[in-house]
Image (cartoon, rainbow, N blue to C red; front, side, top):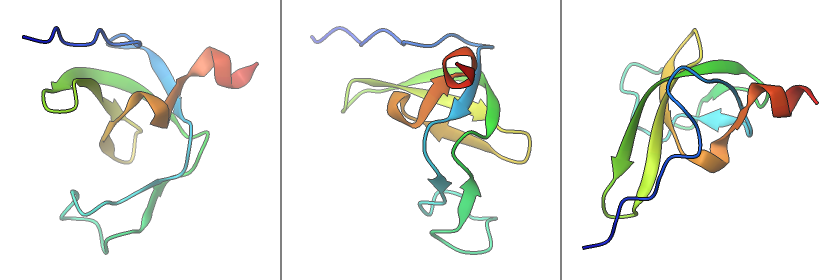
Length: 84
């Protein structure tokens, strides 16, 4: 059995969107698919950490204030790093 990869970020950690985040179809209440949800640099906070078994990667549930999104590590960055 492959051990789950450890998360890089922590629950409650302030982060920013590292890239523009678009609806990939997983938000049924969004007006349309492919709509911009959060611009790069938008602040958020990790509210839960899960794991995608098949890909063996952590998934971060991030509250961006206007929407809560599941993000991969490459889609977010620690807030302190982004400010530097």
